[in-house]
Length: 201
Length: 197
Image (tube, rainbow over all chains, first blue to last red; front, side):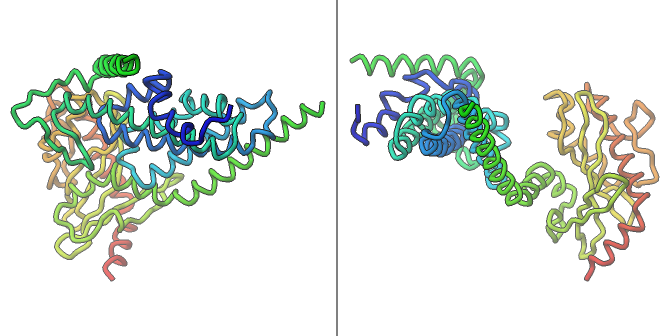
C-alpha cells in the first residue's frame, strides 16, 4: 500500500502526467497554450491551487463528513483559485489579461478536484503535498511543451517577457494554423501519440 | 440527526473561514489592482495623450463627485504647467460602449487628444479606432467650441471606412467629455492651481 514518498512525487511527472496520461483538464491545455509564457503562468497557478487544496483537504479529511465532501472540496478549491486570481491581478496584470477567464475556471478543472477526491482525502499531509506538487509540475511541463511546439511552429519565435526570440530566423514562414484552435487539437494528438509510443516501447 | 448537524456546522465553518481569508486578501490587494488596471488599460491612452508630459499622469490623479458617480481626472504637466486634464467617457458603439480617454488643454481650451481604452468593436473594422493611430490623431488640437462630428454628419472628422458607428461613438464621447469639462471647469481650475505647489 505505502509507496515510497519519492514515487508519489515522480508519478506526476511521467506515469500519471495529467493531460497526456490521465487525459484530464484539457480545457486549459487546449485554450491557453498559444505561447510558452501563458502555458507556464497557467501551470504555476494550477500548481499552487493543487498543492494548497491537497494539503488542506488532507488536513481536514477526518473532519469532513463524506456526504458533503464534494461541497467542502469545492469551497476549499474555489478559495485558493480566488486567491490566485487576486494575486495575479495585483502583481502580473498583463498575464491576467491574457489568461482571463481560464484562471477562475481552475475551480472546475477536474485535475484539482480529482486529486482531492482520489488522493488527498485518503492520504497523509506530506504525501498529499508531494502528490499535488508532482502532478502540478507535470501539468506545467505538459503545458510548456505543448505551448513551445505551437508557438515555435506558429510564429517561428518564442516570447519571454514581451520579447520575441527568433529561433528559425527571418526566412521562416509562420505556420499560423498551429496557434489557432485546430492546431491545439492536432498538436495534443501528436504529443499523446509520441508519449504512448515511448511508453509501450 | 447528529450527522446532519455536523455537516451543517463543518460547511458553515469552512465557508466562514474562506470568506474571511478572501476578504482579507481582497482588501490587501485592492489598491494595487486598481493601479494595475489604470496602468495597463488606461495607461497607454493617457500616456499617448500627454506626450511630452514631465510628470506621471497616472500617479497625479484626483476625483470629483458627479451626482452618484465619482470621476477620476488625470493631470498632465506640459511645458512646466499643469495644463492638461484627462478623463474617461464613453459612447455607444457597434458592439457596446466604447470607452474613451479624452485629454483637454485647460489653458487654450482645446483637445489634447483622445484614446480608446475599452471596447468590443469588430476586429479589423471598429477596433481600428484603437489600433490605427491616424484616426485618433485627427482629434489633436481641435478647439472645444467646434462641433465634433464625422464628415457624414457635417463635421471634420474622417470616419474609419466601414466603421462609421464606431467613429460616431468616439465623437459622441468627445462631445460628452466637453460637456463634463464645462460643468466642472471651476472645480478643475481650483484643483490645478493647488497642484502647482
